[in-house]
Structure formats: C-alpha cells, structure tokens
Image 1 (cartoon, rainbow, N blue to C red):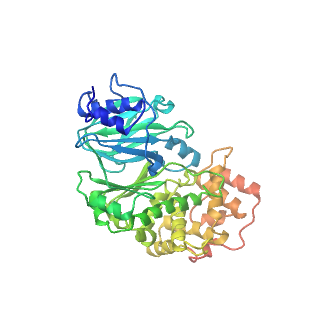
Image 2: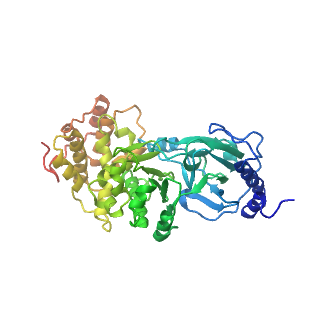
Image 3: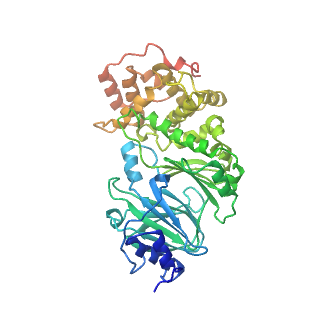
Length: 473
C-alpha cells in the first residue's frame, strides 16, 4: 500500500492517467532505486516505456507548456508539453541563411554537477523516431552544450558537469505534442523572465533569492537570452519587459530585410535565436555560430539595457551579429560577408530611430557614417556604405525586394556570390550596376556578364555612389 507522503502518491497528484506510471518511475530513478547511466546513454535498461497525456499549466516560453511539482525536500520535477519544430538545418536550407537558428525550448532548469536526473518521455511518433533531445549546457559558454537523444519511457543520466537544461523536438509541427517530465535531486529553477508572463518586480525577487545556479534566463517568443547571474544582478534595475520586447523587434526587423513574414511570400522561422552573455569570459567576444550568438562581458551594458540596445554605438556590433542568422548565404561569400550583414544592422537602426514612422525617412545610416569617418580605408565599410546608397537611390524596400528575389531564385547554373549580388540588385533597380559595384572591387564573372547582357539594362541616371555619404575616396 502506498502512503500519502510517498513519491509515487505525490507524483499522481501532479499528473494523471498512464503518465503517473512514468512520473513514479522518474521519481524512483532520481532518488536512487534505478541505476543512472552516463550522459552518452540513451535510456535506462528495462525502463517503463508507457506514456500518456499530462495535465499542464500554460507557459508561453518557446512554445512549451510546463507544470512544476516537488515531492520531497531538494527534489524538483517539471512536466513540459512540447510541439515539434523543424530542424535548424532544414530551416537554414529553406531560408538560405549563413547560420542556423536554435530548436531549443527553454525549461528554466539547471542541473548541478554530478546530478542524477531522469527524463520521462511520452510514447509519440516523434519520440519513437528519436526526435526528442535533452540539451545540457549553455551554447557559446565554457563547456559548450551536450545533446542527448531521448527514447519513450524513462531515460536516466548522471550529469558530469553542471548546466542549463533545454528540450527539443524536431519534426512536423502538425504531429501530436510530446510530453516530457524532467526531474532530479540536483535540478533547480533559475531566475527566469518570460515576456508576457513574468513581471519586472517578480523577476527581480527571483534574482534576489540565493541560488546555486550560475545562470539567469530571459525568454521571448523568438529569443532566449542566457546570462550569468552575477552580470544579471548588475542590471537588475533595468526594464526587462522593454528589453525583451526590443529583442522581439530586432527579430522582426531583420526578417523584414529578406521580406520574410507579414507581406512576404516566405514564412518566418519558428525557431529561436539563442543569445549567450557570459560575463565570466576573459574577452569581449561577439560571435555568431550555428545555434547561438555569444557575447563577452564588454557587451553586457548593451545586451541588458533596453535603451542602449536601441541607441548605443556599441549596439551596432550586436545588431550585426544577430543578423548573421538571417543573412543570406548566396551573397555572403567572396568578401561580401560584412557588407551584407550590415543590411540587417541598418534595418534595426532605422526602426529604433523612427519607430512610429512607416516608412522610415530615407536618410543615410548614422552608424555607417560614423564607421566611415573612423575607418575611411576599410573595404568592408566602403561596401556597406555603397549598399546603403542603393537603398537611398531606390527606397527602403529595395533590399527586401533584392533579398527576397535571392531567397526564391533557383538559378539554372551555380553563380558566384558577387554575380548573385550584382545581378539581383540590377534586376530590382532596373539598371546596370556593374560600374557602380566595380568601384568597391565587386566584379562580375562570365555567367553574370551573360545574365546582365541579356537583360539589356540601362546605366543609372544618377550615380548612387554620390548619395548620402559623398563620393568614395
């Protein structure tokens, strides 16, 4: 007979149906009656693989729903109902982006080093196909992130190095949701701000509580921002709601550069941008990679201050790096990477400078003007300025049209990156821009020459290189 205070009895009060069996096994596994395996393992031998629906409370963060339960002192268990998302590799291919976004879904949980954790997974088509993953660690921080495949039933692990916990289900979004129950004696909740759910004062009270977890998380619909707790405390007084609204705005503004989203033919990615700020790092790194964008301590005042994220000169580098996960790969090689990345930064600048003006005034970029003044000989800056001059010549919607053409273009033969840029820009401008691009050392190969000759475009009536910034040296 089960007592009212037993882990199994209390787990049944949190969950219902057949999942209570999984929950009870999870609790037993965590407290020691089921042997834990190493992180490389996939599932505990002989684990119960039955699953069922879990009654959960709404948690809008990253599309997951969650419910927490505590069955004994020091033990935390939480249930998540996860909808499948497409794989980052598939999304990069669909959107032709330079770097992948992330399919991680925030749990707000941290596991201490040497913790024994257990993960109960519902038996669904996605879990049977091996599409459910547990991710341990913060991407872009020291130690990186370890990915563990999960199977239906109970999966148990001993975590050798402490880390944040994330879940991922990669598959068809129309498939049935998968419920995952995660718990352990060394698992704890971190201070976590969820846009639309958590109030600023509530979050600050979380920050003020003592915790062994070294990380704090801020979550929006399209953004996960993971910050070391010591740095988050320094910026405790900032407006977290405004901050996360700014990150959501940045994602929308940068999608619009490719004409992705409202008004475009291409739907935005449902994946998130995972931003890491590690104030313990030794260098002021700013680096985009597959699945994350990592920043060092030099960027803390911009990343955690909503006003500085909008207007500080150092925000340019933040906008630039965030844009690389939406930057188009076909026009980012052959020395074009910094220039085409600037398109995503200037779009954010215009939005924050003129938030209530649609369209924004047709003015030169204040940040590019400063960069040109500081680095007049920089090829990257010169090319970025020339791209902005084409916007001044043809309107704020010029680059969204060019990029959307690039995104949907299916050339019959491979093109060079410079060919693609010059040809697509010429098509949208209705002008032969070969001489204009040549001033920045951007040339057209035989294939591009043939394309442009067949279009029979005229030379532009006004030289775009004279607009806004003056003639290049």
